[in-house]
Amino acid sequence: MTATSSHNDHSHADNSGVPDSVAAWEERYADSDDAIWSGNPNESLVAIVSEMTAGRVLDVGCGEGADVVWMAENGWDATGIDLSTTAIDRARRAAESRGVSAEFAVADVSTWEPEDDNRRGGFDLVTGSFLHTRLPDTREELLTRVAAHVAPGGALLLVSHATMPPWAAEHNEKFDHGMEHHHEPVSPNGDFALLIGASPDRWEIELADTRTRQVTSPSGEPAELEDAILLARRV
Image 1 (tube, one colour):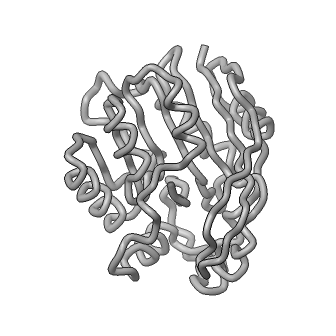
Image 2 (tube, helix red, strand yellow):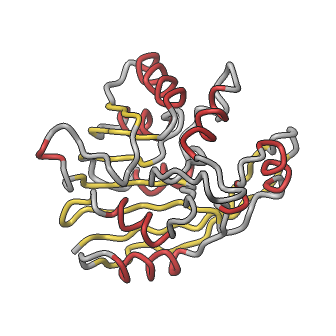
């Protein structure tokens, strides 16, 4: 997947260098006539979710929907939310083109609730890949909001940057969105510490790992990235 914004909608007009992230992410997607991501699901997510029993899944910051579509194809009752209207439009088209049923919504995770009351706090799996925290919020607040959608006995899967992509600085300069405030390397154990420190629920680690993957940089060069993987179970 996809880099995503966090979903804590605030106005930051009085914070120099900090964008209105809803507008910034929508601009990033809308500035391109074509999809900005490959359309392939995140390989770490695929490896882990393939071993799980399908149920209800929520993908926070789903971007153009590649992970959601893959999970729907593999038997999951899949929902994706993202701040960007353009990204969600593309996600819906991707699902339609693959002939799968999935729900998508333009939404902020801090305020969004499923229309179906039975789904509120009732997802068997909640995923978030490369979530970005919007200042002045903290990552702890973001993880708490994401985790609130996990049902008792359900799981939270986070795939994050363990190290920053080598092209991150160039990306920040190109988009001029103050993204340097949001691109912060994390560790699986660090995320778990934040989760258990803020969530009112009890959690156990099922997987905390760092994995490398081969990618193609925006300039077309081969590169290697390190992902931090956390799979935590609500108990």
